[in-house]
Image (cartoon, rainbow, N blue to C red; front, side, top):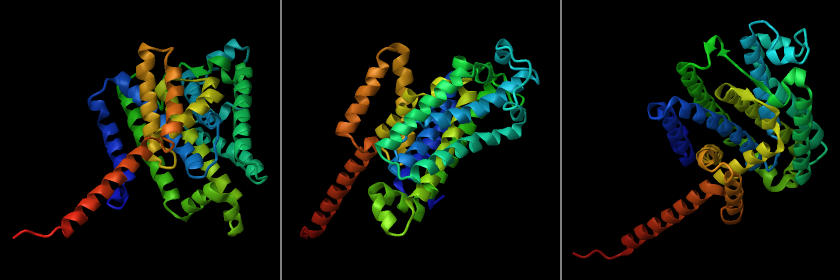
Length: 358
């Protein structure tokens, strides 16, 4: 723990975790449930920061991986709610037998698909794009196209995915009633625990030579290649890691909110995810956590009173950050903290040089 708390960003994260753990003492069950959703977004934001902030790969379709993890969790919860029967939306669509793709999700062990499905898709896309040296704006456009494809696919397959309405009406999770307050508290603490684990994983990656290579790829990919490294291998791995983190975030999101629909996989949510990281401060991890929780907290507060104003507020905030705070909120804090430290150092030196009066 002493080693972990050596860096300022880790100290800030530790304080945030302590505040989150103490939140149930001060907030209502409704607010705790809402905060649990924000934590799932914070987990997702760290995955995006890992690939964008540290590797320089701007993905505008990460909602797909978030949605796949969420649907994997939702399919298990839906079958648990059906008690071995055909889910309601399938019966309404005319199906008489559970589709083969749904059959594995009747077992809790199927939750491994929360990780495997996003990892497999990211591995395929990453290999085809990064091995062919597709990068920059071309990769961003491709990721947007991926998001659009999956939204259309999931909406079109009404009988298998619930269509536009998605999956909802979940009742229990591992036998525990989701409507019960105790279950909501358990889900909340599980979300905080996963936030901590994901942060440790990301910090482990960027704290070693692997992380330095990622930063080198971001700042000069050709130089990395000339140094004897294959950037594609590192980019594929970090893309898979980011996708898996997004899938975990989606799985945390579903029991907190009680629904998952294709809308969560769309282009607009995917762009919002990037905005969270930009506002918090990309390339910091802690900025991604702060940005996701802060932006969504403000979104909830403002949209409750002025729902039509929120989208304008978010857009103006993003423009202001890009123009005046390119390094985000964390970057500003570091900048002013550095200035204060320099001033203190100068004062100390001046005091040392000043002659003493006897």
